[in-house]
Amino acid sequence: MANTLIQALLRYDTGGECDASDIMDAVTQIHKVKSRHCFPARSSAETAHVLVAGWGFRSQLLQDGACQITDLIAPGDFCYTSAREERHAPPIEACDPTRIVTLNMGLLPEKTRTLVYRGQQIQQGDVTRRLRARLVSLGRRDARERLAYLMAETHARLAGFGLTENNGFDWPFTQEHLADILGLTPVHINRVLGRLRGEGLLVVRNRHVAILDVAGLHRAGGFDAAHGSIERSDYDLL
Image 1 (cartoon, rainbow, N blue to C red):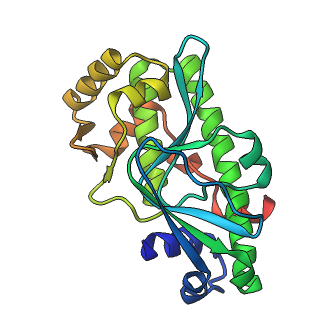
Image 2: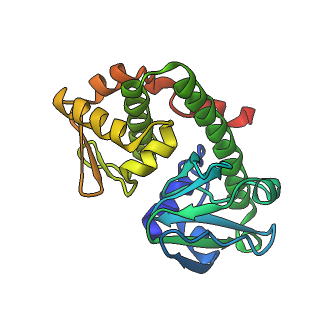
Image 3: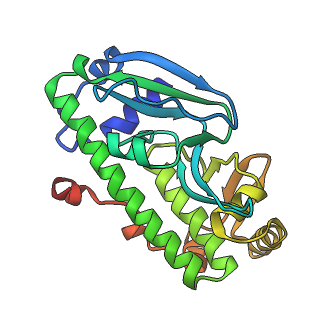
């Protein structure tokens, strides 16, 4: 838990000015959320919530009962980046058992508090970028390209938090979840996963994704790693 929290915040520390002990001293609560339950709301604007274990997602239910998952909340992410987001965005649901750390902003030194605000701004930009990419996928990419892009994007995202090993990562989402993310059916997802496996690109098994050919997966999905997230040089523009 501590490693995920510290790495999540220090990745925004471009000047190396913050101390990991300051971050841990500001932890006031650890929430445990069961699968299919909603994440807790922030107690005040003076707190920040960071997901340190497990995954969450936001979704929109349609009148006919269909579901569209609009974003994935990964380990290391802030659960809420602004009071406005918390009020107006759909609630975050846990995909698997999760742990969420509450930071008391008032206990952080000013330089570390600034780091948290910067990280929240950067994450807002990342969410916007992912939504734009998903819009392109749903409108213009075929099923194989959609799934390849999502897996390549997720791998790049988790690598930034040090949460990949041998090009693999934990993945609690089912084929039904993938169908709701990518606007496909579970049957189609199963078929495409088999195709990607047959091409030697990836294997999804036992809640784990193993990417066998990173460059090949990028080509299959049209994923540009250079634009997969906001670069450090862009931090001060946010």
